[in-house]
Image (tube, rainbow, N blue to C red; front, side, top):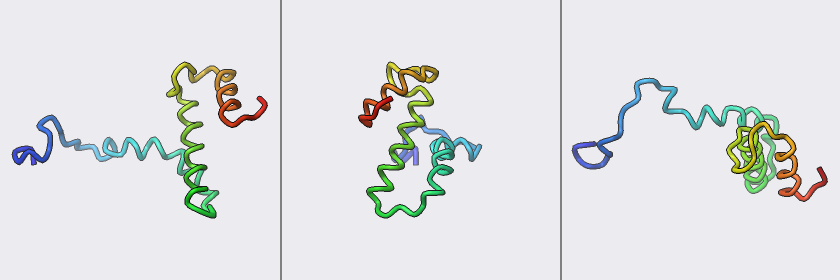
Length: 87
């Protein structure tokens, strides 16, 4: 495929199968949270709930700019402002 130009010449084959599943490993916790709620009424509800799980995971891992992973006060303030609730 590299010779035919279909694949970048910088692409490399990973021999360890688990390295190809980095995204799958990251979502392992999300899958565990979703399993009890498998009775979603509609696709839009399921999408919103799963997006919420993903957002909370990103905040907890420190992937949100200006909010460190260990600053619970800033996380609480962000979540309260996003969902318009009293913190």
